[in-house]
Image (cartoon, one colour):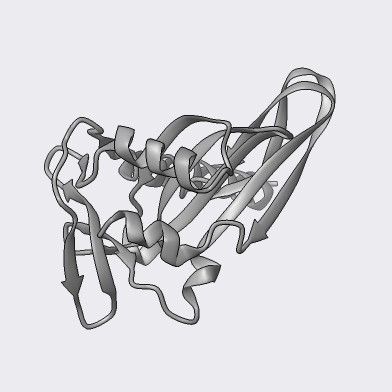
Length: 195
């Protein structure tokens, strides 16, 4: 009986420790972004990545400072691609390189409903870098769409790293289909904005 109680107590303590650890990991990636700063993106070449710096991170305050003007990027995306009818949000998500890539996410609407593009960006020191186009970079940009099915409105689900993982019905009782595609917006065209 004592061994069973000890095993139960150890299991409960292990579960509690894991919950605390996961909660801390989520909070450690909660960097803020300042969309009011405007500056020219700089070109960077490192041993692992070559591309344009699109933001810098202040590790003391947790702030992310874009090197671009969000209004200009929105106008570029609306005017050049015909992909969005409206843009609701442009967001940078930083992840420690040990946890994976960071993301530039643009959400909005098109004729079919809620849509987003999500681009993998890479942390190099205090810089967030959009990789130079090459044969493999088309896979770094994904189009996400949520199509309502017996649902009035859908929203994107994300994992703790900020990656879009699905859709959920936010108004109504239906479902939302999550569709992922690549090649809708050509990576070199997006990269060209930051020149």
